[in-house]
Length: 173
Image (cartoon, rainbow, N blue to C red):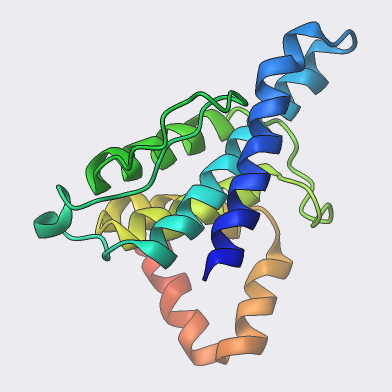
């Protein structure tokens, strides 16, 4: 409900604060680039949550239906007009492409964004958007990050189901 809306836009505001102020911060440029990528990921995730909570599901027929307002700054003057679904999904995808610039690949850093996290989210995003080739590409990249991810899938879904996924990945390689 409204708690999701408020919470998501608070997180989007925080991500936008980082994006607007990173140029003023002194320090390691590589770390700043990772923080920028992480802010894009957080904004994409929060917009994704809003899309899935308050909008019609993704389908070609729904693309002109109301999406969500796109907050790209910390300005309270920025318009809150809802974009259509097509624009909203494109906005999330653009943020995710910016998030791909992150260099952190440590999957043990679960409380922060990493390359496998971005790949996992892109796989889910493209799956929802019915772009199965892209979904498979990013799922494969996410699973390659660490064998423990596959072990986790085996524990959750059983060895047989994971073997089907592994065989599918092998065929594509």
